[in-house]
Image 1 (cartoon, rainbow, N blue to C red):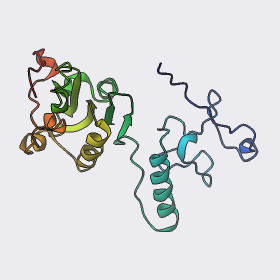
Image 2: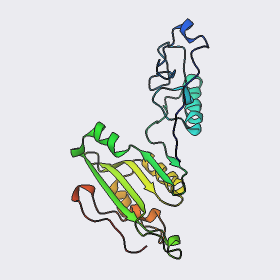
Image 3: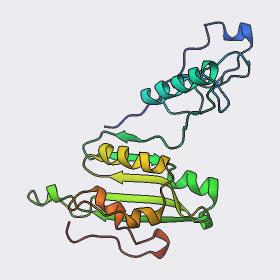
Image 4: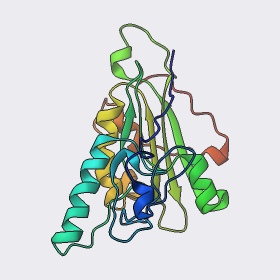
Length: 211
């Protein structure tokens, strides 16, 4: 049973209304701009309390560090809330970084995207004889920005480990061409992202017959 109930913020009884800080009345969370600044210029908010942001501890830590550097260290670096790697630690892990396909279509338009995908078979599944086509990888590329990868998704063993490495590359502006030029480590699950050549728009079969 998988249950994702979400969390509401306990902001209604701490005096925010006294100083005029607005909250989302539906969930108690605080809307902020891209510098974590509320509608009251001298009040900032970070972490799970932010409206529409990720409820992840490493995100809160990073945002806090960057906010302190902007306020007191002369920095101008803002927290990147888009290219955040994360994983669902279900028995078959799911890892991602960047935009989901639906959000990418909404933001860029389907005609401006190319989606590459593939099923794959982990070598470790050979002996137990598990289904060849349970694991899945997908990248979403912006065709009008040098096929830059704006979404990365993997379903398979150790997906968190795979996503963490690719997240750094995505932060550096990873493109489909760079992935194609990268020599894969055989036989690994992550290798599938260096050999993807089937697009969703082509409708071609992505089933695999071996590792």
